[in-house]
Length: 581
Image (tube, rainbow, N blue to C red):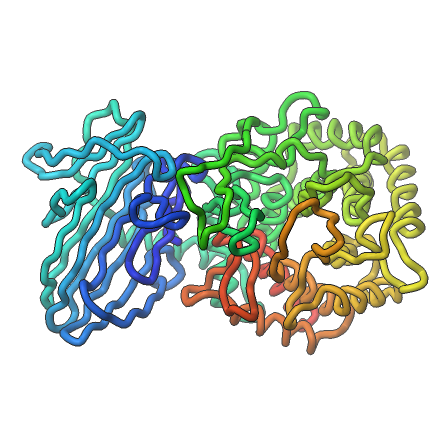
């Protein structure tokens, strides 16, 4: 992934940008080959023949360097999206390092998720040759020292790159009604330094595997929209959880849960600016009647995310339908307020402090929860089957009231603390009674089953129960027995039909990181370190993680890169630091 905190692009090992939504994470894609083929749009620079490839990010930055080695020479491709202004640019710099490399350049623009072939023209703007592609509201402008030629609704070129040559190409997005902008004085080094400086401000002393923790923090930073503060769950849609199946979802939106957990991870590392930014986004997004609270919003806080299917895209590995929007926006997920309250409590405890507006919002939301907490819900995993009394949801309801009580008791903030305390204790008693199976000595997925769920691992992490409590130790054992696949954790057993969907899925990486944290707090530090070592080794060649992992196929599964995986990695690393200290 490369990105500028407006949006992000995915770059393949073959030098092809196969996914890019412009101008925002949740905008339509103009390069959508990731969910189809090159006819759905891509931008490729690579050797014309056989080659070997290696990649790295330049230090703690989002500047991606790809080295192509051929029989005749070596070429390096640097990909970056410059930050620091409102322009959306992708800059690709080719450098000849050794010998001569035959380069193939292909630029295929298809707006509206690959469905709209644009009107493409070669022209001169202020004596600068450019290629413009226009369709509807969008315009892309390609610049470079050698522009490709039109060939059957695409633009392509082949040329030799010699040692010492340097060629810089750029693609710029702008609204189609605006005049093509001047060439940008690209500040690649300034962008790199900006990333490096941000990462260096994080406190990682004593944290294991600091290289991938830094990469994870920067990934979370890049998924935070620079103007609004909204934190997206991933920059992609419809990368499948089940190859060839229907478990394909659009993650380019701001889940309150994921964003709150991201905020907690960033706060743990000392990144308070994002906390303030996201808190302000939250106040705007959820303003109004608490009964209208949604589990997710668009990047700018808009409420409508209708779920549609795109018949024009065949899907990754033939996985259909390809979805945009997300119908889960209308679900009831009772755990969400708990995560939000925890994050805002951590913000209050940090150097960020608190605001009257934030506390006023929390009071209204918690008071509304007093009337709704007993309702069944769809749960953390956005179950599309029957509503249940999910144990994790109830635990997070407890957490919401618990953090509200803390705000009054520790910080002297106003609120109906007596009633909050009374309901908090009722919720706890209910969970210990209805959500626990004494025969197995384990908490259960919901009140009407003996099945377990990896989300139960969150119980000690939010302070509901001690990690070494015999009931929690029994729960960890049951989760290991029922949900472990090839040493990694499933979310739950899909065979039960609880989610109302066909097909299977693969181990969910965040769940395995939760197990690391649970091991650490339960005193199983050797197991915690061993599992953490294995998990970080699953990252791709540049340290990024998807939502799930297929251990038998040795490949990533689901939307990529996934904030939930990276934030859970960060949290697990800091848990390990705590127990090691």
